[in-house]
Length: 554
Image 1 (spheres, rainbow, N blue to C red):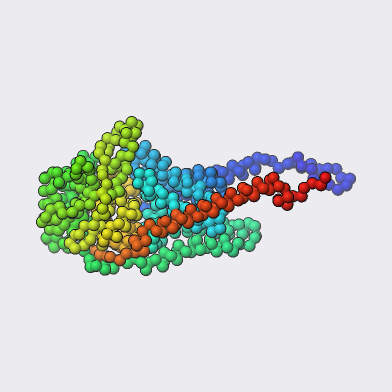
Image 2 (image 1 turned 180 degrees about the vertical axis):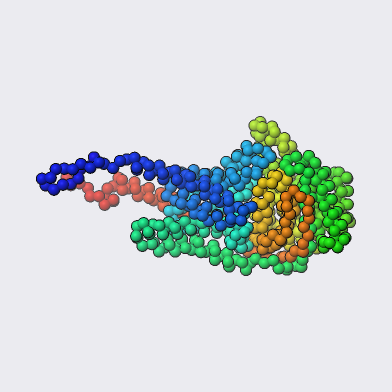
């Protein structure tokens, strides 16, 4: 109970004390609402990714995530970041468990979400700094950089840039690659939240807007948009080195899932048959004769160097079409297994090869094989022999054109794609095999990566896939032709050959390194400020005069 002041001679009046329950309720709400908002904003980010074209949802997703983190301790934000990561990655990567069950899918998400948890803690620390959206977006980029490299060579799937193939920010890929594109999107999202926060604070308190904070927030939103508009001048689909007529073959598979491997010869026959069908149409004058033909990854899982009958099938198809073919094969050489692209000439046979350099952990090789075998022998049975890595970029000279090869999983990695362009590629091919993942969103997510790569390096990108979706992508990121899924089909088109190198190609990892340093600087500044505040509080606690409290007189 509280005692109210009264006039002299009047009785004291008692009023009930404030009940503690509402205060506890408010604190509970303040804990629960961010904990609910974090995973929901992660789901919103997932919805912004292909096959949907709702790229702009990434902005409110990061705005809500920024709201959930701001004002919390780094420890609390660690958990909020993990919840955001689960909301984003659980639906995004569900395709990884299509054929092998939910165990590997959940394990992958659980590990990858740790990176986002650490990012959440870092964002909470820098959110107290001036112009915090810049520092926070840099911290996100640093998290993506780490996730793309460790463990087991990294897993860059889900980089923010890969959800922006249809967005206004896409031209920024030509400026600084996926790190700059992703940074711009995250910065704009955090900037939107900061604008809303400042406006609401002004309306609630009536205090004048802090000019510096308002300007920084506006720049956080405007700079990415203005930069993207300015970067459009770097995007072009004009032919610089002439053109080439390319044919993309999708032969289809007997069945989807892991069982497609059981009919390896049938897959080869399907691709040879579709090539011969195209050759007949060319002879009939229905289709332009291609300068070269591109087959997908695993189009010949029967080693043509060890099996004369497989070599004969490929040779017959090459002679029928009369131009070189890039064949995706599984080859054993010196006791080692390679995922290989083979350049097959109609007159000379195999004349060049490219061995996949970024092989997929748990798909093409098994880290911790003995441990996994002890846990579940079925997992190790799926990958009986590890694939070995190649060491050189793959650039085939096909009918005078320089064709860079980036095999399937490699398209997610910045360095693999860039190395083909710096090695002279005028066109990029991404041969892939998505049959293992049935009709999941995986093929659309990977197709979006290729669209981003086309703009990043200003190259035509072809995507031959065993079962779809195969496509031809212009250097400006537009898809001009595509197939359906699980159908036999071919795409033929005259495409531009280009030798121009974008700033992203020339700079390589430098923009990413700069953003990582910015993140490190922000975290260092935030940590130093927090340490100084703790020291000042300690001094005030032991020396009252420093806090403006006079010592009592004696």
